[in-house]
Length: 145
Image (cartoon, one colour):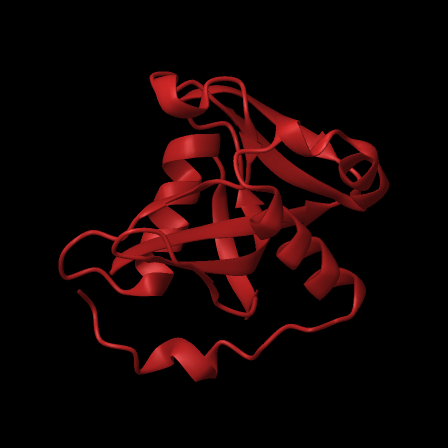
């Protein structure tokens, strides 16, 4: 099973999203996320991927419910609520066209086709609105891959 880790960063009642530049999802919006590397914890991976895709250093605060996408071998997505710590670093322009701050209402009013995976976006938005977030301790003892 493939493991994808990422972050939803909140600032001034807006969430940071990235617009993808990869061929298979060109122009689609998503939360900054990517593949967990070998010997990396889910926390380290989420922080690294967020920095690479946004240029922002973050601190993880809470965990969203795990989202499993069952296609072929399956993909497990683990997202974390993060707080912006430092900005101004370069992000990977080979993978990301732009970063964009959007309110929950803006996201909810957008066409589903604008997102790389609307079910993931919907899961995160619903979790935020319903305060369905978990303490990071739940994931602290997960082994690295």
